[in-house]
Length: 319
Image 1 (tube, rainbow, N blue to C red):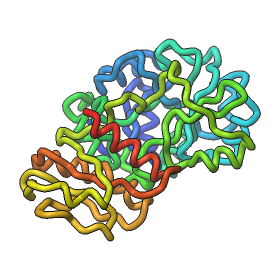
Image 2 (image 1 turned 90 degrees about the vertical axis):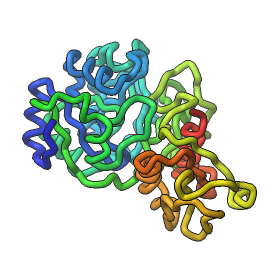
Image 3 (image 1 turned 180 degrees about the vertical axis):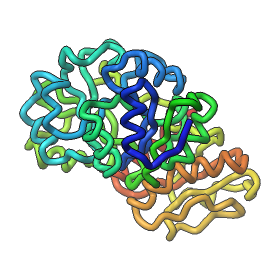
């Protein structure tokens, strides 16, 4: 496994059947050529991911949507037109180009166009799509730097051919919003930086209840989990969180919330955007120093990035 900043090297690797971890605006993805079934199978093997759990297919532009999908609702096309490139995944009826290996046998496929400049350069130079879940072991904390990828997947990647394309720290820091787009109603499968209100404003439709029969990445009850036990609470509940020392517990909350008692401060983000960027690094730091617990106060707000951060912390705490 080689760390590189060469897009040309990453393209050559993908075309030769290698896996390439690369930065997006959300998290790092573990990429394989979407039409290379052998490489896609290695993605599942390296991640330890169940084969029935679908992958997201990354496209270079809105124009590729028609190749990888069919019969998309008009409102979904409007979302793609308005929000791509960006942290939005559309789960749409799949075209004949899409293999069962990508979808876990479902009739739908998740598609998105990332906005990270290096990811777009990679996809445009490659000229076709890349299938990529997050570049970490299945169920764990997603990576937001190249070093996180090495820490998680170094023992599992092929040192002779696989690559990590270093695009720096991820700007958003939590995974994309996933919207199911198979009928007249947009349905939120996973919250992210794109809010329900933005979806409703663009489509002119209220966002419906998620369809639990459709499998989507990152939607298991327990996910995004560090080894440490995660405890969620509000700022008003912190007085009741006692008995921890800097050697046993860490604390994550916005900067204006004081650390309760004697805990190790893991992150002090100023605002929800910074919280998203710092969350996964803070959870990883807890494991790195061997903490048994992480106490986290999610940001206020019920939509968009605030909802996404809360969702990730709830799933992390469910382990």
